Image (cartoon, rainbow, N blue to C red; front, side):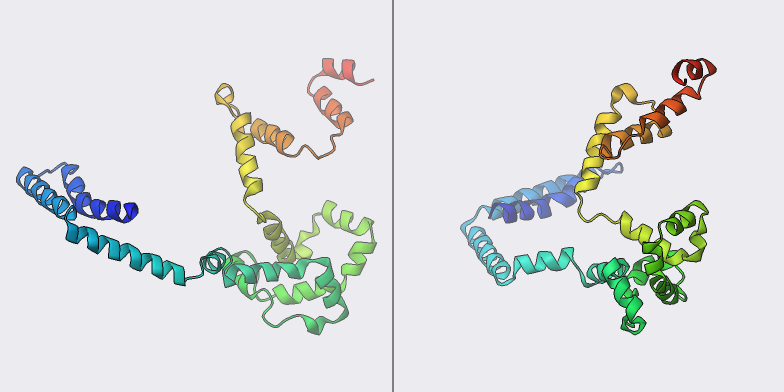
Length: 240
């Protein structure tokens, strides 16, 4: 009842408020609208208006009660397109890749359909499926060989599977929930306080990485070597 009452008040007062804030204010028009608003607000206090408002509230409640709110919220948050993208990204899991490796014909004909609708500009649509099948065919070799993946990474041979690499990057970038970004912004507020307002981007990235990724094992020897390399005097003191 209260919300609908305020809505009616805002419907009455909003045009007048806009006119009063206009730099080319017409005083006669403003006075006229204020007088009309007073009459309309007095009308809202009548028994007839209250009865009409009560009927509107009852109709709104019945309309909302007929609708499955949980179902509506699930539909809004998990649309067919977003679920389709997640299904397409599931093709990159090892379980599915092993399945495609054994039977390439099991790859659905509409694979990556929803993914391409959203991220199609980042990949080559023409060669995506064929490249994925080729990647799946040698997946066993990539998993069993320790040296090969490291070699591919060191030599920057991303061009061998550019589309699969792009999909993997996008899939790893998409957060499962909003909790991780929220924690990152919370840490950013702590790291970049008013005493560090002039901090450079490189230093900020380093401090954020230290704060957010505490589970990463720190190699203290590399830190000492890097710090010592900044000065010949430090090199003599820190490196034996």
